[in-house]
Image 1 (cartoon, rainbow over the protein chains, first blue to last red):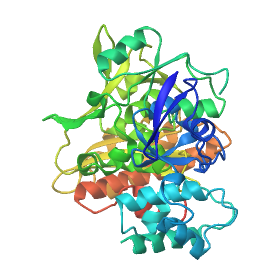
Image 2: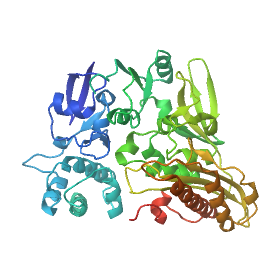
Image 3: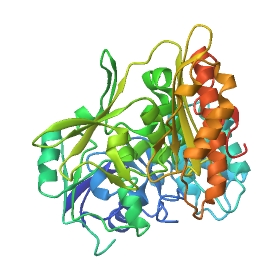
Image 4: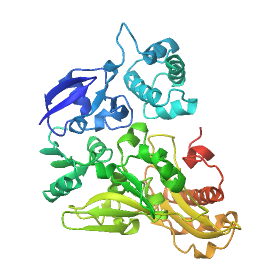
Length: 153
Length: 304
């Protein structure tokens, strides 16, 4: 089927099977590979994107479901020359090691800070509770989000 | 997903369009948090024909009805977790919704999907049962309302016909001095499924004696289990019935053993959950401030 997806404000018309997940279409048809495939069954959060500003696991969400909605991926937040405050804070705080979980973490953190600019530590933990990291032990990621929140405020 | 792809996907914008699609064999999809995740996990193939129901305005509404609350079937867990009318009057539902999956799961998962998926471990099931919820089912031919007891017939099975769509869940108004709560045993604090759980609804008189009591249990039977024979506990202060509540829960549970827990462990732990649910519901009926969800507010379940 032919569908139009709006990713980071740009419309992409793609022809896909109706059973294709949003993740594979973003990576393979749209061509944005910042969003990662981890567990592929909604456990790890590496595939997190925003759909109408809310975090969604794109591995388990059909591309067809996302028609007409605003999809935001990590490429929509910052650039190498102008990092988003969350990205900069993750680097400064040491919240990135292998980096595979990082795009998903950033998207969850971004959604959290957009809806709650002054989160408590507990709010941050809940906001990131659908994102697994196997490297950092989380402490520096949580600190980075708190730092970014303060900076954005 | 090659080979499992549906041949058609249509987006319904009205209930009538959705019901028409069901008559041709399409299956409804809202967030897909059970349907699509099940496909990813290899539990089942994706249906050949899907009708998306998550943009139908009637299914997204939540409104007071004068004698209660009507929640559209596509209202998300994220909405239920925070909505003032749910937190204020039907708190057990907010407790359950707040425990589902992660923020992403709660954004896409819906109350209609949760009850029609009919998992015996569903977190909204026991709350809805103790709050006397009814499901509105509609087809092109008819509309009917069924209780949760009538709806759930087995694990993953309901009494709804394939051409019936859950439109809404309705809840009767709550008497004064009533409270409700849901707690569950969990091994971790997110992306978790209830090991066991319990919901309670308690109404107190002016002397804090229990005048009405309902308890339902999660993940200890083929469906959500309503506890019977609670009448003998009425007329007593809530804190004096907790041992009896625990005994009833343990006696009436019929848990299985699986990789998540043994049957004997489940039977013992559901007694603890039932006791805590009744205590929290009674506390709320008295006006105590117990945050949503009870698990986080009182430290039940996994350690902080």
